[in-house]
Length: 222
Image (cartoon, rainbow, N blue to C red):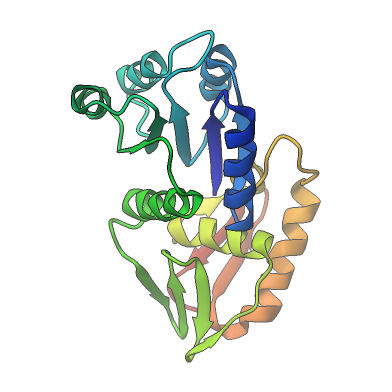
């Protein structure tokens, strides 16, 4: 899953990127509201972490513009604006969650997990696919009670296919959702991850290649 962080405090933004990357997410960040508005117009993200006090364009204006454009991306506001009326305004403007500074980084990860689970799996925490069980809260995969060892990238590819189960997903879309601007990931890399997933998960998944279109993960092995 790919996350955008818009935060002008360099220490905090780097800390957020570090803890989210360790949690297995692909993270881009910008410190300016204008840059954030621009990237949101052409790049698709799974979640936005938004500081309201941004230079260039205020974070609240970015939030309002997203909702005006019918963009349903989950938004976690992180702000020093901690008054009740400011929180209410944030929620009324379209925030999905609101976290006041200062906060613990582990809480950010927990809230990000919850927002993504709510957004993509309709609140489900446990998703079963044949003998595999995926915990969307801890982002772990197990088979018959034993954890399946997947790299962060392999897990991200599997997770993206899982939330789009029974849909054909292009290789380009997978690249877009699991990598940042700084990552050296291309279609060939995705093919490698798919091959590894097939070997590790075997008959527990039906992961088919659709020529010239991409891949489809289905609920059965027919």
